[in-house]
Length: 433
Ligand code: XUL
Ligand code: CO
Image (cartoon, helix red, strand yellow):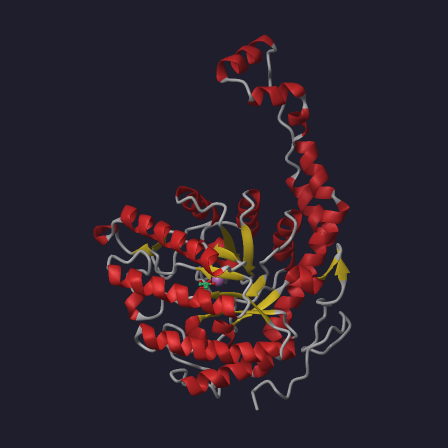
């Protein structure tokens, strides 16, 4: 018995259906641009928010009651896995993601953590063999326990660096064992509170060395998935080293990792960094570094990382537009690093939240595909940059400031401003969303 077993598998019923637990837009088997929506979108459930998060906030503890609480023992870890796979059946979802700490409690020492991770991943492996749901990515939680309070690979204490190295190795092994398609590193505490006690340069060097060890280990064990880092500007650290896509790309280049590591971009983190999500995606795709996405939004008024399910089609559409334009996901997918609100207590709330998120993504994705097929935005772009197709313009890029100046003088070049046509293009997008 799990809290989800009275629920049938959710099916696509179309926009006329009044059933709240049906897909109204996400028709998994529908073909769009040569692949099914399921193959394009590659949805994943996040084990931490959906099963491990208990509904607490800074002012109060758990609001939820689940039969796998308290989550401090292995018996309940197995119960949680039973519920999780039953939930995956209800959603018919192709992927899930985890941190080690979501699967089983921290044992307080590395040997204990290693053996319980092995036990629970054996169990999860058996569950996966009976289920269609595969592992999109695994990761290590190196931010909750007090040992990580001053960072993991960037900790001033080399013993914490060692514990982090051993922890990541164990989580990479577990991800590999379960056939995971990516391994993610998000550095929640890889940053600082104050420069009064922080050697920023040394910490960055340690983080770069650590990530090189991760890449070496990936090759050593023959893990074929992608290694991804997840940018976030702050929270929990005041300043995180992996601030945004551009910062991460610079970091990866500095430490020689640009061909080995890609990005797992999150919508809410983009907003915290003062960017739109499509800005982050386009920054990554321009470098061939888009790995995967966490498609969860923030509350625009509160300014916190509220990890809410997406519910804004036009926003989502522009994100998928840039993903599709770059060729779509390869190893990555659409993970909901999202939680229900703490008053949403029931199984139905959890299911409906994911169903709604999947529907919004499908709707946005289809709009993106239609825009790309129509070609209106691409046409507008090539028109705007058409001047650069001329031989003189191309030549200029290979020339120098003095020769360019001579040409500006001899031809009396006087640039004529042209409209950026933003509102017209926004109206164009509105026809599709
Ligand atoms: C935190 C966050 C993480 C990562 C995985 O803001 O996004 O849950 O996705 O560690
Ligand atoms: Co995330």
